[in-house]
Amino acid sequence: MVPSGVALAVAVAVAVALALPSVALENGLARTPPMGWLAWERFRCNVDCRADPHNCISERLFFEMADRMAEDGWRVLGYQYINIDDCWSAKQRDAAGRLVPDPERFPSGIRALADYVHAKGLKLGIYGDLGSLTCGGYPGTTLDYVKQDAQTFAEWGVDMLKLDGCYSSEHEQAKGYPEMARALNATGRPIVYSCSWPAYQGGLPPKVNYTILAEVCNLWRNYDDIQDSWDSVLSILDWFFTNQDVLQPAAGPGHWNDPDMLIIGNFGLSYEQSRSQMALWTVMAAPLLMSTDLRTISPSAKEILQNRLMIQINQDPLGIQGRRIVKEKTLIEVFLRPLSQAASALVFFSRRTDMPFLYTTSLAKLHFPEDAVYEVQDVYSGKITSGLKTGDNFSVAINPSGVVMWYLRPTALPVQPWHVVREQAHGKGLRPILL
Image 1 (cartoon, rainbow, N blue to C red):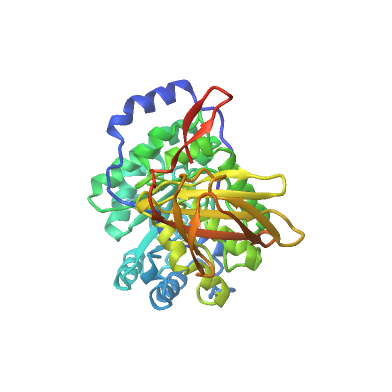
Image 2 (tube, rainbow, N blue to C red):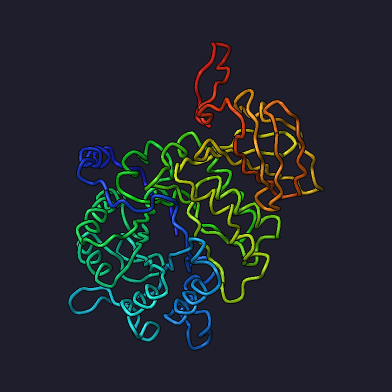
């Protein structure tokens, strides 16, 4: 939930920069992108449990999603967080100033919900907002309440906090987001910290300092909320890869760019578009936070989200975010993500809307090391091709709005640390670039 902000004052930026040594999160968490389920995109702020008890924001919804996560194969694949979003609390704090869950919709309390989730081998996330109100109009966490709310969440057994930024000033955000990092650390409980800070500042320098951000948050929302549409997915994709030179170096183990939720299994994406979102979020090293109804999800959507090789790539321990390396006039784009053990992932993506397109290229044209030989596995079909040499031309047939995704492993040397390649730089010789 991301409204626009006003210009960040120079004094605030200086103050935050000076405070940097004391704000480091240092929690050792989120060494790979977090995976799980988040309520917001699919269920929004539906609080009418009388008219719609099956889909309202209530403990019943989260109990049932925890059951599905544990019993339908999600947990064993790494999806571990069940995340509450906005509209969970009562409209007022209690007499002691503590946040409390809505008594009708969460009669057992958040601690009981956390215990239930933990008993299923899962973890519980919760939502707060660094402002006078949450985006949905519920009590926010103003600066006076940061320490108290962090302690409350820890006492409830919360494992992740998403801290939004509605109804807060830039000064409050610059002070409050680092303060919450310190407060979470001080509780002694491991709590993954998801910030919306950069999204409220336009996501880019000079307003956003990604060096500071990586010292404060485990993951952060950079851009607009995702909606249940292909246009929304494309707008996010365009923003992230247009600005990849800024965003890509900021990501890594413990601190991730978050392009927002996976909407696979809902209403707005076709089968091909669903496969594309999963592949593109994976190549971005994005958190995989599903927002769909796991009680009714289709077999085809479940198959996409539970693709084991896709998840392995997303969770690669190097934690290098991928980049777009080719953008053709034919509306074909190629994305590359370096992986551990000299492996890599390639995504061939079509923005075409007419018919399947046969795209021909070679690994040499994509800056792979000379004289290397690769085994290639198609991530979706599982088909394995051996003996692909860097200089060999190959063709892939890409469906409209669809992807072909490859996992490549070198089988013959020489193989260099090839995510550093050499490229002609304005006719002045060669320079290293990070793919």
